[in-house]
Length: 161
Length: 174
Image 1 (cartoon, rainbow over the protein chains, first blue to last red):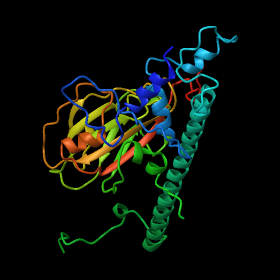
Image 2: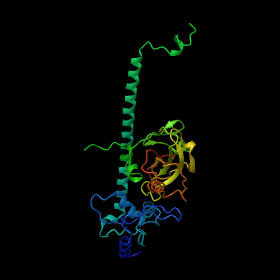
Image 3: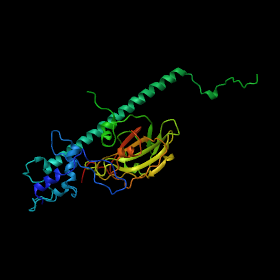
Image 4: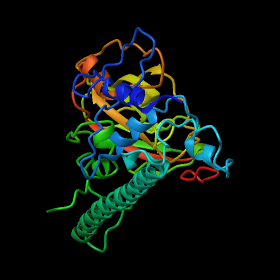
């Protein structure tokens, strides 16, 4: 397990968001997506930023949540995750906090999904109501005794008399 | 303060994939005669084959580019493959549809395994008929950069749907 100092050095050497380019290099091997390096957690911390930071430093990690379940007694060697020291000074790096943030983001996405769908349906309803009103108006103007043109006899210019 | 009501903003499509833009063209996407409206839910089995895409406008000489991307690949909680390019069609004349364009990247049907993914269709107007090169790979595509590279400007239309694993439980890890 790496000492915490090494980890902190790694974090501070990550490129800052302002200088990272977002252009995809079409003719070179795929680059890893840029990761925000900010570690100042001013409330409320941006959920995407926090999670991306934590997950990219776990890049070789399969699934921290799964890992915890099959290990009911605390394993003698410390868990492979970098941030699980229970007494680490920044409490933000405990697994519990990570799960909390992930759950919060998931809940936020869920709410956004629900709200977006509701908004879209409202727009649809308004649009259809307007169209309906317009069609009803047109229907009225034409008159209730409207008969399809083809069945009506019309005098035309081509009549021989 | 008025609440934001644009589904593209509320659903974070504007933000995660696109910048704010003004809708100026009709874009109708239908899978099996079912029209896609923002945020509707479609199952992978319903989107196996490419949809019918009709675009508006009035000038057959105006050409358009359509992309379909997944910004939530492989999982919305860790979208490290954002955006995954599912389809890229160029040179679509106004008033027609995707089947009249050039398929630069063929349609790959969405098969999300983790979470609920947004699948976003974006329509751009081209300056003229142009050659567009397919990217070397589908993952980590960037719609904004692509538009800049080919001088496509801002989108003229966009619509998205949600898609999760066929058997549901998209939001739960088992």
